Image 1 (tube, rainbow, N blue to C red):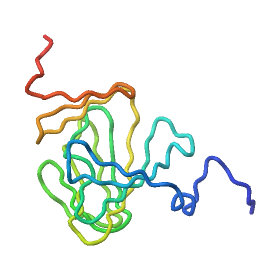
Image 2 (cartoon, rainbow, N blue to C red; image 1 turned 60 degrees about the vertical axis):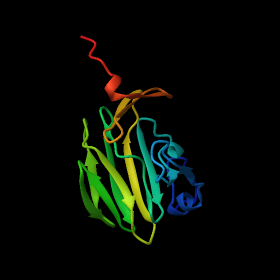
Image 3 (cartoon, helix red, strand yellow; image 1 turned 45 degrees about the horizontal axis):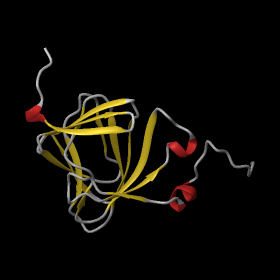
Length: 158
């Protein structure tokens, strides 16, 4: 067995020792998710994989859907409620949900007393459109530029 390190391999200890980034979605005051980015560390550029941790009483992002980027969640630990198209489903370790595009609206929240930990992944495309149906807003991202518009202000081009 070799003890050489490979830049293409992350051991569990490496992931556990990596820094967590805290994110709070600007459109959801209940949002608080702690993220460990893992795909970029090994050089992946077209796929995003992140370990998320949602503390008790908090929510992941904001109820949303995607137009172009597929997404999934795989629950690693704890319990949570995954809302999909207005219906809540309790989830726990080993549960998986996938969101092909255009996706159903979805959001994870943690009303329980232990952290909800999950692997989330999806595509990294140059352009994405995401809808926030309860807020009547649409996010348009091109590269690193993002704009949010009120869906009531959208007009058909043709």
